[in-house]
Length: 167
Image 1 (cartoon, helix red, strand yellow):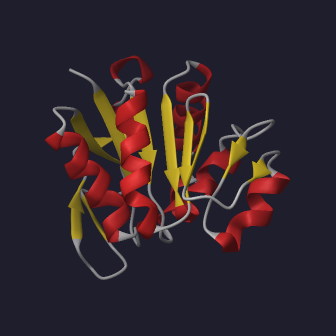
Image 2 (cartoon, helix red, strand yellow; image 1 turned 180 degrees about the horizontal axis):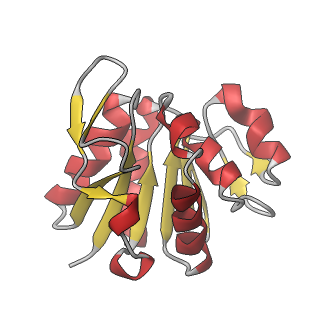
């Protein structure tokens, strides 16, 4: 069975966590909510709880086939954790699926995985994506090798379709 980490922290965008998480489970993939280890439960921007099923301190890249980085304000918190950035970077280097939507591109930037890649994100962080070395494309989903990126919740169907295709 394939296994995918869905990163979570406070102020996450509710659809960008739960839609991929549940869609992956529906497809028979072991989706796991992976938090920073700061607490046992994280709240969305609206206060909806997401339990930490695993702490980043307890995960190994070898146990996962992919990682989903949702948006909201959570990525700005996630990228402050060196273990999060190292996990994403190593997943990328090993050719595993690295999927980021909306503000999740902040983690991609901090993990230093965008150089020479094509990517998209929420328009407000377009400059961050470009400054991290990517070619920015304003499309619902951009796939560049193992990197899958999308702009916002409206792009979730295409985003999840490409994740499932890669897995």
